[in-house]
Length: 383
Image 1: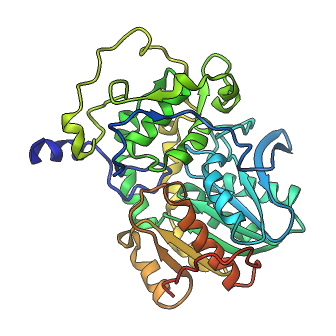
Image 2: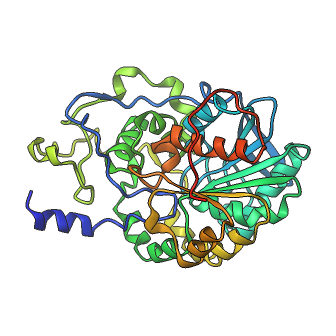
């Protein structure tokens, strides 16, 4: 492939700093020449309970694990679900004594509300505060959010009286707002539907939205729904056969807007469309393009709001280039801890769940929020 062709392909993708819940960096794995297993995985190996919480006329879905220690409340990015935290939960529970509650935010996952379109930062923050009040009023709370969920965590922090710590993952006001201009074109470039859950898992891995295939197998079913039943794809997993979820280079989805790896030059061209390939069975759980009116509100004023939260804070980034001027000054003044985790995409907690867990666990132990459950590697914060 010529450098000009590569440049054209890259121009079709949003910048690497998109802080919206969707990764845009490509996977560097060398395994695409082999047959791979994209069979989805249920939540059971990762969480103890999957249950609903009624708040007025709305029903919020949560996943929980653990019975002692402070409560980590985990908030996903736009388009994801609580299952995005599965591998992270598995890792951190082995490092510190704590409890975990991962929430399907309004309009996402298995949560059902009377107004699915009200995804304003204030509404989402109030939802989180009400859920915590309903199920964890007596626990010490550490809020951790990724991308849009990080912005929601910052807005929710002043509403939670028992908050003791705040963690924000790969969202910075300046780079997030800059990236919004390219979001609609990026969303249009995604497949609008899939014929199977396995196909959706494969696309998310091969496009670089999620670099970690193990995480994608449990996370992606929480992002799509069955158009016939209107239920989340997680409800269909038990009925799948293993053989239907194996794929090789002849059956993958190839799109011109996806940068393939270097060796893909020698891969055979994609097969012609068939009746089977055209089947529409699953679509995205939420149409993110219709939430555009809320995008600016998620991130505007985020840096100031983050710095004004009075509890100890930690910021995890996929690259130091994401830090804006206000946060740079705040970091130099020691107002928060910062950790840069290179060699991963925007979905940091899915791509390198062990590293993110180490950073959060170190933060919790250092601030005396939790006791260590093992002798895990301690990360050295930037301040």
